[in-house]
Image (cartoon, rainbow, N blue to C red; front, top):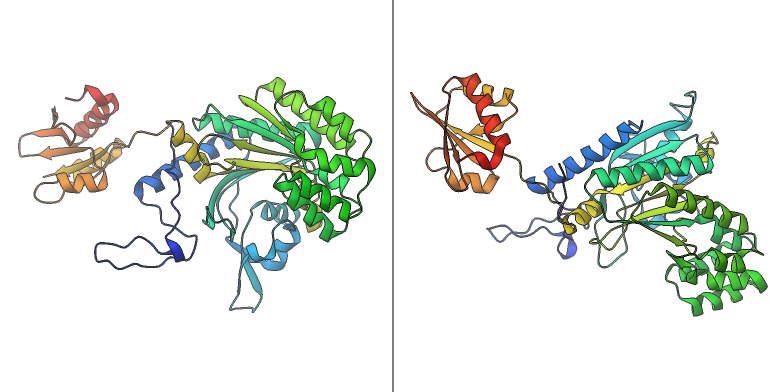
Length: 439
C-alpha cells in the first residue's frame, strides 16, 4: 500500500500552533509541529515501508540516541555550521550536549566503538528525526524525520552502486515512479580549491552554490586562482545536465587536479545509467554540498512537489577515521516529509484504513474483531455519525440480542453478520477486504 505524508505546514510566526476554539494559542518552539492522526499514520507507514525495503537488501535497523556530547558530534560534523546545532548543558555532568543534526556521524561513532570488531561491510539502517536550526525563510521546520542506510566497509564504485540501488528501490517501493537522480562529486570542487585558504574556500563555495558566475570569477581571482584553475572554477556552473557533458568537462577539468574525480564520476554515471536506477539522470559538476563531509560521489533524488531533494547521500570515506577507525563508507537518507509530499503530488495517496465502531457488543465481539485484525472501538451512546467523521471510522457493527449488522457510514449500506463473536470477526474482515462489494 502506498502511503504519503501531507505536505508539512510551517508553524505560525513565532512557532505558535493554530488557535483552538477558545481563541487561545499554545506556543510551540519555532520550527516544531504536531502530526495529527492522518499525518502520523501516513508517515509511520511510509517509514515502515522504507525500512522494509532496506531490510530486503540486507540492511539491519539500529536505534540511535536523540542527543550526544557536543564534542562527539562536532568531531564528525565539520560541514554543519555551529549555529545549526541545538545545544544544552547536561544537568548531571555539566557537559555540553547537542540534539543530533545528523545520524551518519552517530553511525560512524557506533562503528568505531561498539561494532569495532565486527567484520565488514556493515549494512545498517535507521529511522528518526534530526534537529537543525534552519535559516531558510520559506521552510522553517527544524525537526526533520528521516529514514536511511549506511554502508560501511565497501569502497568505491561497488559501494556507491549498492547504496544508489537500494535508494532507487526504496523510492519505487514507496510508490514513486517519476523521479530524477542527480549525481555530483565533492572531490571536484575540493581539488580545484585545495590551494585556497579556508575563508576563501567558503566564499567561493557560496558563489558556486548560487551559480553566480560573475561573482564566482571575482572571488576566485581575489583568492589567487589563475590559469586553468580559475577557468575551471568559473565554468563549473555550466557543467550540468542530462546530456553528454563529458567532452566539455574534459576540456575544462582535464588539466586540473580534479581530473581523477571527474573520471570516477563518469564511471559511476555510466554504471547507474546502465542499471536504470532512475527514470532521469542528471550530472552536476558544480555540486558543493557538504564539502567538509563528503569525499567522493554525492547524490540526490528529486521529484515534483517539495522543491527540495526527497533524499540525499554520498561517499564519506574520511568520517569513520575521525572516530579512530578508518573505513570507507557511503549512505543515503530519505526526508519523510519531502518524499511524502512528492507522493501526494504524484497522486499516490493511500486509502484510509477501515475502522469499525461497535454498538451493543460484549467484550467477546471486540476480541473477535481484533483477532481478525479489524481496528475497532466501542461506539459512543446515541448517534455515532459525528464521532465517526471526527475520528475517521468507516463502519458500524450493530449488535442486538438476535442480530448483528455491518453498516457503512458512507452511504448507509447494510450487511447481515453472524452473531457468533469469532465468526462475526472473520466475516467483517472478509467484507472489509472486498470493499465496494459491501452494500
